[in-house]
Amino acid sequence: MFNEIYDVIVVGGGHAGSEAAAAAANMGSKTLLVTMNLQNIAQMSCNPAMGGIAKGQIVREIDALGGYSGIVSDTSAIQFKMLNKSKGPAMWSPRVQSDRMRFAEDWRMLLEQTQNLDFYQEMVSGLLIKGDKVVGVKTSLGVEIKAKSVVLTNGTFLNGLIHIGDKSFGGGRAGEKAATGITEQLVDIGFDSGRMKTGTPPRVDGRSLDFSKMIEQPGDDNPEKFSYLDITKPLTNQRSCHMSYTSPLVHDLLREGFDRSPMFNGRIKSLGPRYCPSIEDKINRFADKDRHQLFVEPEGWNTVEYYINGFSTSLPEDVQFKALRSVAGFENVKFFRPGYAIEYDYFPPTQLKHTLETKLVNGLYFAGQINGTTGYEEAASQGLMAGINASLKVQERDAFTLKRDEAYIGVLIDDLITKGTEEPYRMFTSRAEYRTLLRQDNADLRLTPKGFKLGIASEKRLKRMEEKHESAKQFVSFFETTSVQPSEINPILESKNSSVVKQSGKLFKIFARPNIEMDDIRNVKSVEDYIQQNNLDREVIEQAEIQVKYAGYIEKEKNNADKLNRLEYVKIPANFDYSQIKSMSFEAREKLKKIQPTTVSQASRISGVSPNDISVLLVYMGR
Image 1 (cartoon, rainbow, N blue to C red):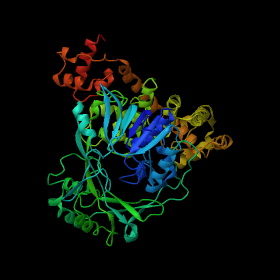
Image 2 (image 1 turned 90 degrees about the vertical axis):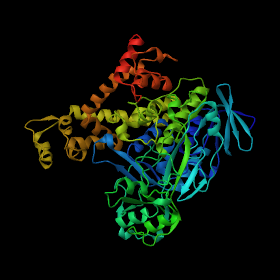
Image 3 (image 1 turned 180 degrees about the vertical axis):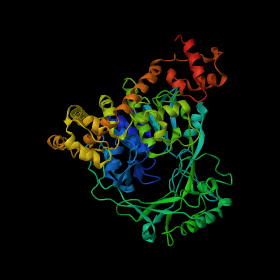
Image 4 (image 1 turned 45 degrees about the vertical axis):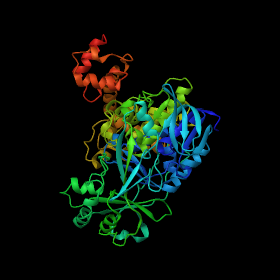
């Protein structure tokens, strides 16, 4: 091993590192995954769940490209929910509650079955760099391992510092040591670094909880799944979550510990995730609210450990315990471990190219929390893209990037490298201007052909996608060409308080009405006959319904994307001298010099660059 030269070395075995290693190895690159503890590969260090608003779309995209997160989410799921089902399909977001131990085990087994992938347990303390190119890594034991490219996915481990009340100690996660050496080396080379914070709630013994005082939160009646492959199956049995609430008494008890809170006494100076605040931050910022939701989530099928979602905290453990015991159902609660906050190093992602390769060091890629993101899904998608591009570079093939109208992954990476982030970045549907195109139901149609071309999506996966696409297309065509008589359709329309028709007409026009759903239209004999005769599954039926009911919206968004994408093809010459453009604002010149966008479209999305600045730039480029 130590005498070999690897194509790709991946540092870190979390969600980003696991996807990066799998992608590179599946593309035929000789890959090494180096992590501090092989027992903790892809560990769910925070909540035991995958997906959610916008995050579920990302998992579907990873799966469509040939990544493993969707498969593991299915095999380790204990509950499935499709969130936002009452809204339009652009907002539908799949989410699973996971068995934490099975999730990590299933990831480990998949990685061990992946060809071209080796493993090594050690802490990487530095990079081997020759000129402006990375040539390997160095471990804390002094072992040097050579490589043609390196992907850093260090998570919260870079100089990680854990806070519980007035106690602080080094660590990447509770019970694990921090990683040192890499930040200092990268800063010496010329990288900018910063500090971020995240936190986690206490874990408790479910045997000490009174669930009768809580509100049950069951899974869907007809659960779906994440992976488009048929090797995984929907759940037939599910575990419920539960919900309780804080109260003014709980808030008062928490406030008693504020003077010992690292959040408020100045010991934590870095920013945490705005949309996932700690409980002390919530009661401080929203002092007018007398209660907050707490979701009580099981950690697996057989364990009694529960995760208290909504109670993330770095308060002293005695304050956590006293306050939680005043929550309904928690009167006799026993702790497995208290909540804590963790500060860690990150590198502002404006220092990266769209491929996630660093601008300063050739062959060096960053993915995950090192780029300032938060969330398993955001990390995994970056790992996948970094692993793909590291492999492509070694193989001397064209780089692979995704545009904003092609995937949430494209939105995520473009946001990071053009706008940067000063607080942990989390994906939302509102960040995607083309979310009607980027639905969870069509990720395979959008991305599987690309994954197949890269060599990570199998031919079986491609064939399944093509069959789904053709079946849905034929079903839509059936609605466009098939007529229905008033005598058959009017009773259905009347039952939905929809205006009746006086003559026969195409089913497409009837089905396109906003209050007519698939369950209604299936009462038309010809529709149900078509479904049965062609043995259509849920995915095809759902896809056809969306194509019929949202055809106008989809077409409009495609046209908007096409117009804006014209600027994606207007390339800015490398090392373009922005200082010569005196009629451009000073802020725009400084931002453009720092970020060095590759296209005019990317330049237009940089904070501080106005439409007038873009017009001036186009004039100077002779456009």
